[in-house]
Amino acid sequence: MNDSPFHGILHTNTAPSLPQLDDIRQYLKQPYQQLATLNTEVDRLSNLLSTTIRKRDELEKVISDHESLLSPIKRVPLDVLRLIFEHTLPDKRNAAFSDTEGPLLLSRVCRDWKRIAESTPRLWSSMHIVVPHFDAHPETVSQVKRLLNTWLARSGSVPLSITMQLASGWGYENTRPDPLLPLLLPHASRWRDMKIWLSHTADIETLQSLTKEDVPLLRKIDLSVDRRLSDYESTDQLALTPTLRDQLSFLATNQLQSFAFRGTHASLPLTTSWHSLRHLELRFNLSNQQTTIEYPLPFLCHCPSLEKLHLEVMHYDILYSPDRSDHIQLPVLRSLSLKLSSRRQPSVDLNRALDCFSLPTLRKVQLSRKLCEELSGALRSIPYITHLTIRPGALASDVLASALSILSALQHLRIHGEPKIPGADIPTPGQNSDPNFLEYFIPVSNSTDILCPALQCLEFANIHALSEELIVRFILARRSAVVPTQLVRFNCSIHREAMGRDMRTQLADELASGFELGVYYDPPPVMRIRYWPFEGALPQKASLGDDWLGGRYDYE
Image 1 (cartoon, rainbow, N blue to C red):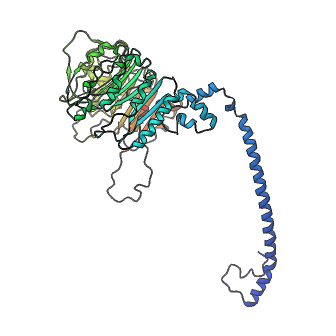
Image 2 (image 1 turned 45 degrees about the vertical axis):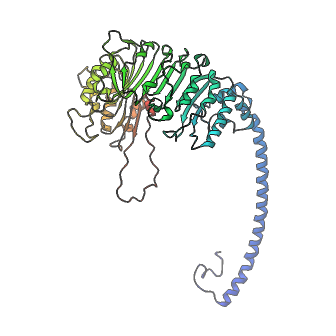
């Protein structure tokens, strides 16, 4: 207080004298009384405030409770609400057995939603099932069985879409069959889209009992077969493995449109309804029993309706059929993905791989690194394709540019990795990448020759030598009026730190006019030899995915 008679010694270390002590005590009597009065008033106001707040909260609750009755969701017709529920399911996969999504999540909202969700069969007809390892998690097996039975019961008579995934722990030590597959068998008449793993002889025997009449709705199936089921000599337990070649008769259903298979060539079911297939994906891994594979696969001549083909043959000796005058006719095939690797041959003859087919409507092609080594000659047989995905590997940039010059109709090009500098012979990996490869795509003044004149989208993955300055020059050149078709999208993932000026700033006008640019930097981790005080403290950068690539061989 400024009017204190003791102002001179306040906030100092001066010790009051004895008379001053008496004066101070006398002086404080009135402030003590005032403080007591104010405390009493504070208590009164606090009680009043608490009472007022309580009354306000009670009134707000009354209002909120009654306003909830006015919520539009309360008046949504039941059939519309069910449809809304169905649209909460994941778009590109089946719903997992988790209370964080799908019907289990909806059931947690309120009693009414739980009742509606449980009586909406379509919510329970989409299932992603992780098959637990029995020896490691016996309790989990029982729990998943209960969940599966519940979902199957609640799905009613709706067609089923099911993906099965073996949990971590399934491996060579596994001696038990899939505990869930027998539970699905009584519902085979409702199978529509299925993904099944076969890791035991009993799993095959379970499916052997099915006929094509048992699966009238089956339109898509993905089969993964353990390699050991073809390597009979590997274990005694597998010595009586039944062959898959002619035992899975249910695959002969005429409704089958999509078939994916992972396993050895010897275990490929030949009972498949080839003539009805529109999508076919075959991934053959090496078997101890078979080291050669005939190419082209003979049954492909029975696939006239095929629109998409993915063929992966790894580590077999590829035995090409003798030259034949009649090509395998695939009249409506639009997408072809080839990944061929021979055990004894350093490269695979792409010309021979393509020459055995007649592909009049082919538009989209994806080739593995081994196949790209003979790119120029092979592309001459399919100059009309519009989408191409390649992995240059050891291919020189001038050779790649020469091969691409054949594709005057190419609209969408994806390149995984960079071609090497022409004539370079540098043993260190990555040091021979050509940083100037994009120069081939930039039109030269007074020249009508433009590489890939119809190009609309270019995507690079896992590059490091390409500079930001060249990317900007390329984009501006292919966005100019000089080229017959303007570039509309450029994506790349760069395996280094950003360098130079920000590309988005330099391309602001193009971006404002609708151009799409996606640049992702993914620098390699730095090896730190010395002690670093920040180690483990900083959040790790998100790793680059390839979502923008649109999947393994699909094109947006």
